[in-house]
Image (cartoon, rainbow, N blue to C red; front, side, top):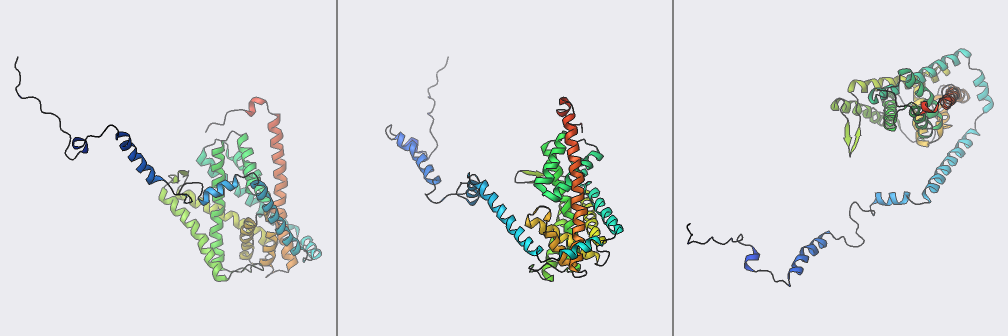
Length: 385
């Protein structure tokens, strides 16, 4: 057994360490341990009255806090009601200036053949719109048949036209689809794709009409022909950007701020544009037929396009009164004002009211049918994809 005469050298801390040169005193250790915490707290402390980002003092936080107040729903309802009353007063004042006797005579003077042709255009538009939900069927794979999917849309679309998207269309769609076992997420995707499809063609046609032709706008619409052309170009660019984005994503979903949006292939995007454009053109064709070709087709199409956006801005269900005001303003350049109003009233009857009656009957029939089914059928599993 050998013993080394050289002891093991002691371990030295790295040079520059303060612990080796100046060992800490036991009484000072708590103060030194608290110093970094105090410094860190000093760095992150926000002075009073200066709220940082992400706190409730931001405008978004203030708005969220405001909407959580108990009186907020009452205030929102009161403001909405006051706005509707104000718009109703304006429409009533405008309607009091109309020669309704002349309008009624012009309405009765419409030939039956013209009404049948306009009705054919209107029903063709409803049938074409029902194919929009087939795009959602393709992407959600909910398993319903083509006929059943189109039937749901045919029932829901008149409610959308007459009662608005949220109260009418979305509620009716949710009721009808959920009865068939379609999930809430799938219903949301179906409705979203249908809304996007509907407006893609609108933007294209509005761009084409406003760039090539300037309609006679209602009184009070302060917009020159040059400004209208710029609006048309901007709307057409929206559709072009959508198609380009679909071509770039190649069918892959788009994620923005944690939200995923399905993006169809560019061929499907072009199909959306084509279907929607044809639908709006059929709506314009119904009005053009009712004018008995006395007004150009561009004026009839402009009536539909301007009436749709005006009704959307006014938030009046079905654009009641708004479409009439726009139609009289645009068509009175070619027809007497009573005849122009009679044309729009006939269009509203054929495109809005008549389908709503049939849709209400169909909706009621489906509700009765589901209530008569056995309890186990009401809780059946969703249809296989």
